[in-house]
Length: 232
Image (cartoon, rainbow, N blue to C red):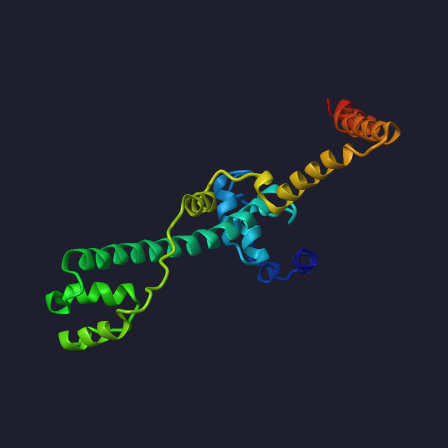
């Protein structure tokens, strides 16, 4: 409509250029990540809105492999953070326990032989609250109040825990590592168990269904073949 006004005004002797607007050139959309790349999936793992997902991909559907794997990375990142903190906590407690036991083994039960660092190790082992302003005699009194009790159980960091941390830290995930992939694997195992109780007729139906599915994925549709011919 604006162009029409400019033309008409010029034909009737008016300065049509006064009605012109500057046109902003819109740059074509640039896809910032490559499909199925680790970079895209890690960005998607942190994308909390549809807009952020669009900026990372240029627009893909929410059931694509990249989105699902990105969601799995997000879940595992939380597990990794939790397990890393738990590992540090347990390793610290294990070290404290070892120091405290060494004090008892080398100096026995004679509290007068304990230095301030010795008392700190013993109190930390028993998880007794203390502060830097406590004097030695106060720490001795604290230790006397708990020395006859059983110390808190120190849970060790096991190989299974380390394997869980390594699994949460993986950066080579694919669709098989997602909730969808795990569901698919579980369904396959269920099918294997079910097959044992199938009759020959039921098993034949399964074989026929699989053959049809395989044929559907390998056969070129006539319409698609026609379109390819026309394009040439």
